[in-house]
Amino acid sequence: MIYAESPALEIVNLRKHYRRIEALRGVDFELGRGECLAFLGPNGAGKTTLIRALAGRTRPTEGTIKVFGHPIDSIGARQALGLVPQDLALYGDLTTRENLMAFGKFHGVPRRELKKRIDWALQWTGLTDRARDLVGGFSGGMKRRVNLACGVLHQPKIILLDEPTVGVDPQSRERIFTMLDQLSDEGASILLTTHHLDEAEQRSDRIVILDQGRVIADGTIDELVLSTVGHSRLVRVRVDRPLTAPVTVPGDGGQRRTVHVGEAGRDLIETRIDDVTVNLGPFLKAVRHGGYVVSDMEVQVPSLHHVFLHLTGNELRD
View 1 (spheres, helix red, strand yellow):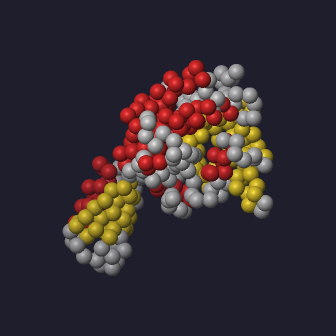
View 2 (cartoon, rainbow, N blue to C red):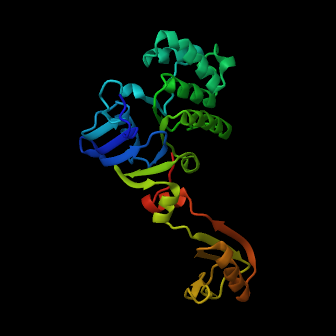
View 3 (cartoon, rainbow, N blue to C red):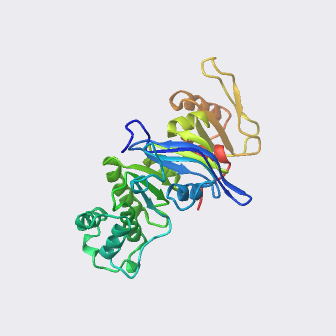
């Protein structure tokens, strides 16, 4: 039975100790029904420990995990979860079809449904014509697609994806996310960990950022930008020679104070503006009025990259 009003996943005060190391320090968040949530964090933040706890690979020291309102160790809760691990969990000396058959049996897919589910997986991954080929000879992107299919063959309602596109080319990444979009359209709830910030920003409904075992941010990309770096644009202008003095930029219609931008001896000027259509013109006019010629200009829109740096002080990298 699934409680009508409960979220797909509910994590409350989750803690995990490894001797003297506290990997998770009271993690709280929810995954809504039909939601795609990107779970981010620097190396060592606790993401892998969390995924292992959700997948039943490690037992939390403290806290609760509920699946559609039921304890995660209750009957049926585990079956509602599908795990796609970062490390490929495939048999290289078996064919695509044989791998799918093996994992279908592992997940308890009834025999009468197994062939239909395998045929669906082959079509879904675009590998019908490679069904009898050994997986060991596949490209990285093809192996990722088979790995994904093996993790969802039992039609889980919640899918845990741990770096599903690591090490694949852009075309394969796009194919994998097209596959995931189909599952999402069919109502699956997806929790995605990734080191690709563009994936998180473009492909998720909500973002949770973990650092040092704690959730430090939770919201949509617009909410996170507004609560951290704000929606102002960073403008970088390179001029034809080093400044002799900062450039004076007048306030906006008397509503904002005059500002001085740039640093003497440098040929790069940086400033922040709230409205490009209103503020960019006066800024460039002030640069020209100072006798300088603009040789290059960059306008940066606030992104998840800036939010992540602001919150953690780290680049997100493998």
